[in-house]
Image (cartoon, rainbow, N blue to C red; front, side, top):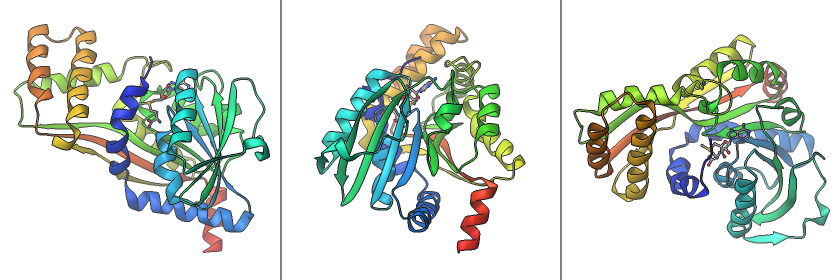
Length: 302
Ligand SMILES: C[S@@+](CC[C@H](N)C(=O)[O-])C[C@H]1O[C@@H](n2cnc3c(N)ncnc32)[C@H](O)[C@@H]1O
């Protein structure tokens, strides 16, 4: 399944303001400590990076020297990320000086930018996380992060990923299944239930966990001794997000149409009324999980 750069751009403002700030501050405290302790740029791997929205949200809150690796299986999205990040930068710097973090096929030309007085090296890795997640986790990094990604994965993949993970993880904006549209429509509940069925269809990793992904991830990582914190990060959309509300209504209706669970005319009626909704709440969860070894070093330094 593919995601368009247009859809990712449309959701970016809502994604950025919805992230749970206290949790993000904890991530930033941890990375500040890494920067001070290691005296080198902090290193972050972003899974399913799309066009780089997660970097644009997080990098301005972090220390001055950063090295990111954006990983996606969609080459066109990574190219769009490179273009968008160069436009977002205050300045694009000479990239010759960047140390390669990894050498593997599917790397795009790296980018070195400055933004808000931060120097950010960005590597772009085109790789399918279904095929080989181990080599991506082997990329030197202090944090693995992902935004709006984990609800796409299947239970087996998530289990394997959590067992391989040996470093802190910051997973934001996983869909939690809760939705509320205002004013309410008599078909909301039926549509939501069919939409959840669609959420569980294969998104490339096998039957997706959809709204169950974040809870499952927390349970597995807790079991492994990670210290996990989680917090809600819902989209609360109103008139300022008209384009997103309309796209969401249409996207939900077409996903439900694919399930063949509901009558087509009911769906069209619902889509029409929801495109005009005044307000919409879509539940998400943010998770910050720290592995036992990092916890030990981080806590003893406090
Ligand atoms: C909902 S989008 C989120 C994109 C981005 N993180 C953001 O917040 O805008 C999910 C992303 O995961 C990527 N993705 C899906 N399956 C993947 C796979 N098997 N390997 C690598 N990336 C994948 C998609 O290409 C897409 O960019």
